[in-house]
Amino acid sequence: MKRYILILLLMPWTLLLARTSFTAYPYLAYSSETKIMIGAFSFFKYEISEAESEAEKMEFGVLGNTIYSQNKQFLFVIIPRFVYHDWEVESDLLFRSWPDSFYGLGNFADQEISEPFTSNQYSAEFILRRNLDYSLSVALISALGWHKATKVQPGGMFESTDMLGKQDSFHSGLGFSLKYDSSDGSFFPRQGLRLESKQLWHDDALGSDFDFQTSKYDARFYLPIGQEQVLAVQSDLEINSGQVPYYLYPELGARLRAYDSKRFIDKVRISQRIEDRIFPFSGKFSQRIGFVLFGETGQVASDFDLIRLKDWHFSAGAGLRFSILPQERLNLRADIGFGEDSVNFIINAREVF
Image (tube, rainbow, N blue to C red; front, side, top):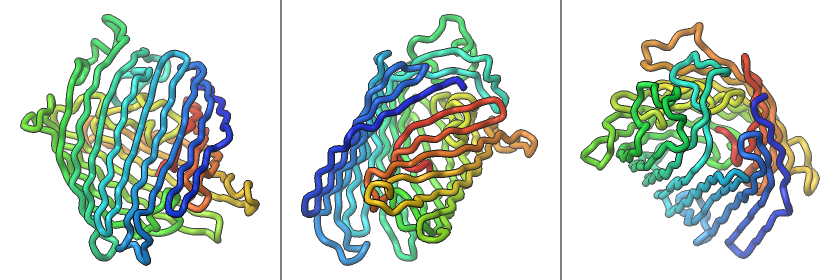
């Protein structure tokens, strides 16, 4: 196992007022890459008005997560969301200064051949969504970001690989999405179907240093098994074409938990995942504790035509869940995944899908 992480959850801070809720969890963690880490996960929600139906909902919420390590690495994510009747405005704001391991490009990267580097990244995505009838919605999307690679080994594998984005760069794009969602829309869906298609265009007319197109297709299905168990399934496909910077390549490790995020990266990613989720306890505190079993498969390629049945990678494992908000199942998660030649341990917030 390349990475060892321990986590200690401290006492939560929770504030509940008439239509306001706030929860914060500080935590300590350790990894071989970052040494000791301290962090905090928080969630704030304010119901602007009492609603008798989803169409009349008015609320504002903010989800935040921050980490600082002994090695002076830093991650900060904030996700504000505003709902006004059938309209939603959501953004995803991120700053990261974090170490990575570069394995090269493609679906056959060797775990034993890698090179450390660090990158600084600012990114933001803004979504304006209109909910229509029959669980359909359409959205306008704006995405932008700045990236800089630092602490790169001179003359090493990273510098010598033929790819875009090694220099300081900015990307900016516009697009749209079409979504069907019959699930309950929570952090922990219990039933229903989610289908979404996203199309995004980056262009120098928008100030982007690169011209490329991104297409994403995502299908998710949630099947309840009794009162406390859910079977979740996801299939997704991402296709990038044009002048794509390496740091926006889809990462197979973002889908297969047994692998480091940069282990397999390329312009195209396809994956399938299945996960059994259960919260078996009913006590005041024990109801917050849950477990998952998962299986995952996927691959990356430079072009969709190069996807091959014999080139799938696999990941399987289990995880522990702790609900910050039991009613909404807003969870902290700790997962361990086993692959062909890799074992990985991950701690994060919210379900993976």
